[in-house]
Image (tube, rainbow, N blue to C red; front, top):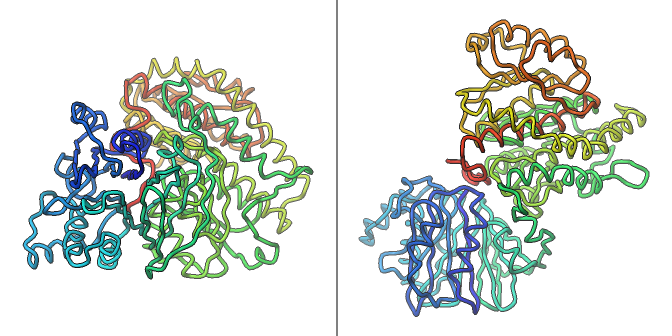
Length: 611
């Protein structure tokens, strides 16, 4: 969602901050702005729409500031307008603020500022309350750092904000509560940002700012203070992502690049967890046989694509371990007073590790005594830091909003975790585990085979891209694949897409099947193949356009389908990793044919840091 970039150093700040904001575009936004400390005054420029609009508006201006903050906003309070865009300033323009998150008590603070200090507000946002509050506090404390700390004690919600003051020319002060913030350690310069991608070009050392901490950046120093205002000593973290990882590398879109990176990502995630004897070795996880004996159930909690990975995880864990598993949408989990105790293993799945609903669910489960294990892609993220055990995917940076390689690596982690627990509690034999691992090791080559034959899927999209709606059906693990395939299509093509377990067709949904309705039938589970065959025949009888997704060798299904997509033959257990790849490609090519903004779909954000 909203992105924050701050720079203080000895180089002109404008271009560095604008460049950083562009690196955060993938998070989703509807306006952009910048505040520069220019000769004892703050110059603010902000525009609705793309960063290009901001650049165009300041193209003829010269700026000499070497300290500044920038922001990409995803509207929460107030419509996306120039006035509501960040940065926001206090009444006399001496303080500017950028902010990510929500101030829950902003109306209470706003009324206090209006009634007691006669403050006049210019926007509809909660963010302006921070700027105006800092302005009042600064008159009392004459120090931005003290003012920020005092303001943090007065605000409620999940938020991160960064502030600058015209009286403190080389200083940025920021505070973090529940939404992400890192500080980057450069050579004669320092940075603040919502995530690491804006900083890769300039440095490889960062500080992870913890919840409730304040950070003060000057060109030569980064200071961190805890929630009691005590200095924090912390070693910087080395970043192992490269600039090239976050660039398109010749592909038309990041999404297509990331789809094509899946063989490498799957191989990396697997290779780092298998020892020389081919046994699963989970770095960062200390779950013992004795620990496992105390676990009576497992809760998997996630949002969106990660939730669909969790649905596959339920099948795998229950099959491989015999332990009952519940899968919950994070935004619903903690509001149903879940039955969680010390006998529960809570698994949080999140690409960014900053998804606020998932983080709050994690805290709820932990408070009730559950052991928390997380599957995340971003090292040092909030979910990772608050977990008892962490299972990192090795997908590398994922820039496109629609998740692809992060999803497949989440699946690989769930396979490895299920196998590890299954051997630990001896629910599966070593022979069975080795057979599954053997199949997993073949996946990178099999994924590459699908990618090498993507032209057939591209041609399908050229014929179907104007269809108003698409249905996805499947049984068993294929139903979970259907949910994810459908989500990919609706995310980036805006086609009305609907997924359902195939057995539910006759319970209402079949009423929507008309001649030429597009139905994608996923039938990769051999033991359910006859049932899916019957479902496809029911759809054919209503003259729908049927695309069947099957393993190689199922020739008979082509006779009742309009078209067929084949994946390499494999065991049923591992087919979801292969089955999703053609559906990712189908969504991509459909959106491309429709001329949509594939990497930055409307109204969506990569990292959802508000509830």
